[in-house]
Length: 158
Image 1: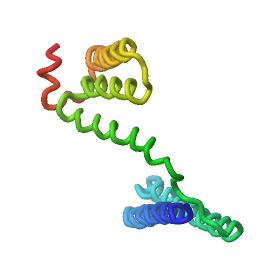
Image 2 (image 1 turned 30 degrees about the horizontal axis):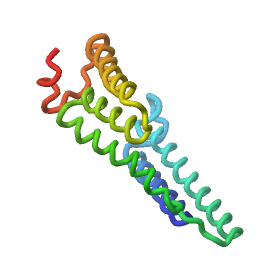
Image 3 (image 1 turned 180 degrees about the vertical axis):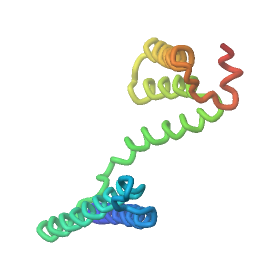
């Protein structure tokens, strides 16, 4: 766990230094007409670096006191993570082909049936009504079309 904490703190510190460098390049002071364009990114980057340093200090103090290291992921934790990750990646891939509406229905149906162990009637009803509600709300009422994918326009012609 300590290694993961240190890596994340260092990652955010690097992002903070990148922000600082770019803000200095843009100009981060108060100009004649007001703040220069790098003022907010400068203080954001400075805050990231300071918070990362405080986090590293806390990690050092905690692990110096405790003296042991817990695992980042206990045994058996990978399976529930994969039950979320694999269907989510599958939905993203399917969205590219059939669009968000149909992909959402497939995802909901799979997840409700396999993970939730919900009955077929409820699963089919939700898998149909939620994408239909999304279609009506976004595509028809708000006039904001959601991604249709390669075949989504053919599969949903209206």
